[in-house]
Every structure is written in structure tokens, then in C-alpha cells.
Image 1 (tube, rainbow, N blue to C red):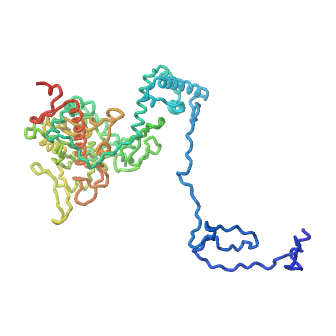
Image 2: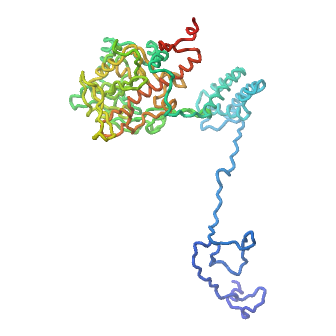
Image 3: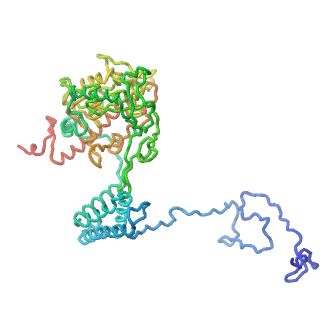
Length: 604
């Protein structure tokens, strides 16, 4: 214990008169009393006295204003802390890679072998790049790669092979090295030009078309119809695209019926993510009235789509996903489905199987049809005990888009699912529709509203008794020479069981950039990309929809909207092709509305 500690507790005998340098006694024993200060919100925080602050300690020098007067503290907000902004943050330097294989979770070979292969491929890339650089002009100099770009490309190639090739990694990569070892500088130049072009197309952007801008072809409606001869695909060329060009024979139909009977009417569920087998009972099962077996169906109602692969990232891959829940089809959870339906459904695509329900028919001759008529048509289908059947048929004139026919259709079999998500046809639409009979007007019933001043107009479609009755109505509007326009027309023609010789299909006019069928663009995408227009928007009431008068929006497609959309896309192709033909020397004979080829136009 400190012996002087007791003295520090005793007051100094001399009090304030003490002059000792370090007095052993206590001084200032009286506590300092801090006067209370009333809070003033206009005063800065720094002027409030701190009860713990010793007043006898040296004070900080007060900041003075530029005019040497004390800075005013009235209405001065408390100082704020300056935050660093994103603009002031320094950019991270681009990572420089060395010629060393990247780490992969499961390396297919030892590091020494991977390094040897990487160096071998890099040597070939560098050789070709140096040869191109030696003789490159100003334009070709853009194709020359830097050394770092060559390294990154080499590592990208090796990493992709290491992660995807597995046991054949070594042979696959050696084959790639030999490919570039044999390659000449001319082939390398072409490859580089293609890569630069793809990158430029991806990064340069594209102006979206104005949806309000009309398609102007420069031709009259009659001339546009005549021009379709340049867009029609011959019937004998359509068989490869799943079009039916030959009507199945009765013997073929009997054979397929026997096969279905032998299988016990066992089908494979058509819905995404299900794929279960089940039995179907047309006319219902006697003992319990069931239409199908194997319980409910858990599935993905959305269609599968493929994401685009980035042209800037060589390792990026296109993915296949369900539109309903955005689940990757390769995901382990994809098998569970996201929606449950009461029954399973199936789809028959074999023409002989389709003909067993309703035989195909060729378009009959019809002298009452105008020679300058073309039509656009679309169908909606639902699931029944016979597969997918026609439940709505719409025909509009082309290029005007005037409605010629729009009816609901009672299918042959008992309905399992009207497929309302896509067809837009609901059970109440079928139940409340006015029944059409031969000789009646097939046009929809239009109600102008409860009062003359009401702006509400509703349309109720009539329902015809069978798909055959719907087809017969369509036959009254066309002849074999009438061009039929639509999107993926093989599905619509098969639904109606029709064989028609003059077809203009937007799937064939706008092929997929990655190849021919079965790859195809959807109608919704084509309309948005080429015309900037939105169609098939769920939850909205489309013009001429199949909905009743309850005012509830139709969820799904609208066949009238789809038919007119396909017609507009064809008009856009007419505009583009006619402009190109004019550049090539084609002319239009105003007297006959005929298109004259360059050679014929030059004759005297």
C-alpha cells in the first residue's frame, strides 16, 4: 500500500496559498458544479457543456471566420459526414491471367498435362495471330488479338473442355490443337471476322420498332394478295415440316384403332414434368364413370423456353427453363412440378390416329369465293378423351383483318381440360354459348350494353356441334387457290383435319437463327421483335375474346388476335421482299396488277 495515499485524502494546510510544485495534500476538494443548460435545438451540439469535461484543462482553439470574427453558430446544422460515392471509387484493375490452367472442381487430368496442352494450343493461336498481324490492313487490324486476349481465349477453351469432356478430355483437346495447327491464316481471318461480327451485333443494341407505326407495303390489298405467290410454300415441300399432304387410308385407320385397343387405351401424359402413363375411357368407365386413371397430375403448365447464350462469354450456356416458375429443367426440383390438375391428358400427333377421330379432307372447289381473297386463321385446342381437339376456330380476311368466322366448337370427346391458360376458352364460355344450327347466322351475338349511352360492348361466340361442322363453315369461305396464312399452320390444319395446297406460314418466313425446324420462334416473340407489339398478354380481355358478358378478363390466347398478328407479319415480309425485288429490277404492271420479272420487263 502506498504510504502517501492517506495524505492525498487530507486538505492542504495552506489551502489556495500553497506554492508547492507537487503538493502531497489534496487541492480543489470542493466539487465543480456545472450549471444546468436549457436545450436549444437551434444551437450546434458543440456548444453544450459536457459534465465530464474538466474546465481547467487546455481548450481547443475556436475556429474563426474569414473576417477574423467568431463564426456564427445560429441556425447552423450539425456537421455531416461526407460519404464516398460510386463515382469516386477507383475502378478495379482488369485481372491479368498467366498461361496456367484454371482451377476446376474435378480436373480430368494432371496439372502437368493440362499445362502442356494449354501451351500447345496457345502456340497455334499466337502463330495464326502473328501471321494475320503481319499482312493486316487498317480494316483487318481490328481482327488482331492482344497477347492477353489470346491467353484468355486459350484458358476459356481449356476450362470448357475440362468441365464438359470428362474422360475424353485429352483426345478432344488434342484434336482441337491439330485443327488449328492445320489451319491457314485465311481460315483464321474468317473465324475472327465472324466472332467480331457476332460480338458487335450483341453489344451494339437494336432500336425497338414503334408499335403504332403501320406496315406500309406500297401495294393495294389486291396486289398484296397476288404477291403472296412469292411467299407460298408448295404442298409437296411441306411434308418435312409435319404437314399432312396425304390422307390416311381406311386400312391405316383400322390398324391404328386396333393398336389403341390392344394397349387398353393407355396413354402418356402430355404435360411438362409429368410423363406418367394412364388409361383413358371414352364414354366413361361403366363401374364408376371415370374418364382417366392414375390420379391427379402434378406438372409445369408453362412452356419450355431456351435462354440466349451470351456472345461475349464463351463459357456461357443456353439454359432450358419452364416459363411458369422459371425452374431449370435440369434442376432436381423440376420433376416435382408446380401445379396440380385433376386428370392426366394426352396428345395424338400421328395423322392416322387423328383421322380415326375425324378423317382429313382436301379443300373443295368453290366458285363463290372471290379470286382476290386470302385469309388468316387460327385455332384453339383443348384436351379430351381423344387427345387434343378443336374448341375454337377464327378466320379473318387478309390483309384487311375483317372477321369472317369466329365460333366455339363442341369436341367429339368428353373434355378433360380446356387448356384455358393457352386457349382462352373457359368452361362457362362453352356452357353459356348460343347453340348454332345449320342455316343459322354463325356470327357472334353482340350486346351494345344495358342502355344506349353505355360504352360497353360484349360479344358472345356461338358454338357449333362438332369440328366437322366448323370445318364445313370454313370451306364456304375458301377454295384451293385461296392463300391461307397463319403461325405454325400444321397444328391448325391438323386440328381442322384439312389438306390445303396454298399455305403461307410465318414459322417458315421467320426461321430460327440457330437452324431450321423444329427450332422456331413463337408468335409473341416475332410480334414484339419485328413490330414492337404485345400480344397474348394474360389477364387482359382481348378484342373479340371468347369470354362472355361477365367482364372478367380472358387468361390465355385469343385466336382472332393471333390470326391478325400472323397476317401483319406476312405483310411485313411482303414489304421487305417487294422492296428487294424492286432493287433487282422487278416492276408492277398497273393494268393487270402483275409483277414483271427483270428479263420480261426488258423485252420489246
